[in-house]
Image (cartoon, rainbow, N blue to C red; front, side, top):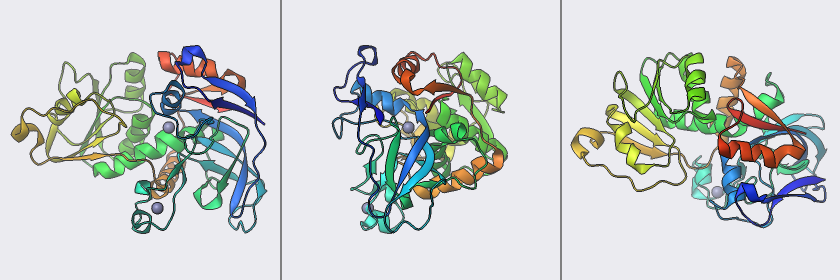
Length: 334
Ligand SMILES: [Zn+2]
Ligand SMILES: [Zn+2]
């Protein structure tokens, strides 16, 4: 099968992705093999290709927003049959036996395996996965090209939304408006939550307004119209954290979505931090993922996207880096 692999990390301009021929994987006990039809391209894939994140295996096939059709069953598979539609996210496998798995916090499992990072991901034609870790997409009415981005920004956004503890009738602020924030906006608006969004991109401002944001501006030089009950923050600039906190009410939760962050400075503890909670998103988890799929199905959550041919993946990733994509996300169609 054809696969895009990263062996030597480098700037995307220097083509770190190589097209190779790999053997089609065989499903083991409890595993299903998926013929991939769609895979979203994520900024994390760009970080893996460019070396912002060290490689966990070498070479590796990136891609963790996978949708496809079951084409072969390993021994003992119970849930699925050939022809069923399933998805695979960043969470490829967890042990099920450690204290975190046992208490329902599998995203903290120290033995976690991540798709397109610890194991080969979706920039290839087939993948095998344990049936318990595939998302069941048989009863979801969205197209596969709309389901692929749900496998990462969708379910990650829902995780952030859940731990932000924002409730119906309250106000939610967000700094940064990418695909993850887009899904949060859609769900929040469906629940009668007022949403304020800070973004610099004109294209993102347009999309945020189109989908019902109550205020769209730039916290760099203005404030939210009212203080918010919860705040979801995407940048990696720690210097902006206090700017976000200045716009929150006491008792608010601030959720940080980044994997890396420059030093965070809080100069006015009493005014800006006292009484607030700060949480971070850590990996992803199946329970929030399945919950989000129900929302996505009910709300018919499509997304503005660019369809990419398999052969065009390197060029597509260059456009992602330059911020030149049409819409919010890119999805590879096989
Ligand atoms: Zn991702
Ligand atoms: Zn575990």
